[in-house]
Image 1 (tube, rainbow, N blue to C red):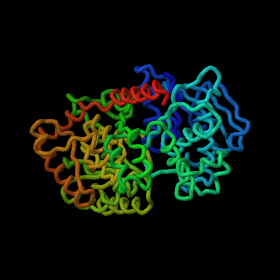
Image 2 (spheres, rainbow, N blue to C red):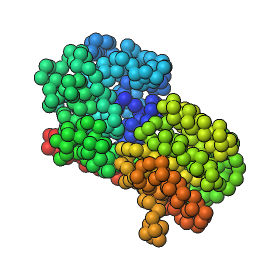
Image 3 (cartoon, rainbow, N blue to C red):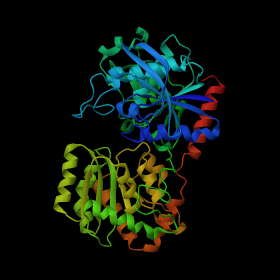
Length: 480
């Protein structure tokens, strides 16, 4: 089976979040199931610089007003189709925002162009290769099934994965003529959304199957609390909705072979984590004592519950814990966390920005990772924590709920606990979870058992890739 994947990010070429990890790992995980994937991504400067021996395979003289070339290339086992359109993607900022952090005003055009290119390739425009199915990700490529539905091209089975429904690609109705869609596409059955144009909404209406990145999130987005205004559209497609939990690339995230950490280790050599702990302490300027190190690797936003963490930081210090925080995001939340670090030198350390090697080292050297998200479609950091024996402390929501077994009395007795869940998702709820962790940490036998149980968890893409392959086959066999 041939599958065209369309994504705005692919790890390790370009990444702002978990979408990139999925787009990079899933095609590789699908290979054992007879699925051949080519992934279409924008030709950002970092992508164009990284690819080797690209071969031009398609030209667009007028891709929504700009010239573009599609290059074929291989990178880290992923077959890529890179859309080189300098007018859209050759920019010094990030994939979606400029150097000042503001959204590019033409984001609608940049990602409509990506989607239109995807639809044309799906229709057979690429020489010597035509897919059987198209898999698109989030609002940035959600217009692919829209173009396939309304453009004069053959329509293939399509799957839309919602990684985070909070990001919807909503734009003013004035952009509609620039999309070059027929007038009837601007309707409730198409991309019209409360008088605006909704990219994600259009994809939800036109894709043949919808997936989310965990079973719990599939249920949550049917409700007003989590559906972000699209719960009605999703409810109308409930029979086509599937929750498939994400996996991780266990070749990259493997404490026994990880080149980014100071000392490799396994479930039987947990004492070797000490060398990694030492470097974490040095990097964050923490006291070198026996108190547990709680780490955070996250975007520093309200969604991720970072305001809750800031509110209890002093309590964690009073209980004898230490905090190591890596991330960037909302300026006020960054300021609150840096202020906590200033008040509690040696007990709270903050490193701004994103640092891939440091994120590996923190998982390998810290005792627990705190993930207090108000909503979390899947989450990957808790899966990394399981793999590395860094016990996850998670809010009971979305994929966090699906992947962590809470250390309640029954789970501890059965020796199956892998972390701590908490609800309600409040500062008091988080503080109580940290207290439980502090209590468990005092019993090294219990703590070590939880570490080993977590490290045994199957967090790879194997089972999830099998489910995606089965979904693809069902759509192709019935012609969508």
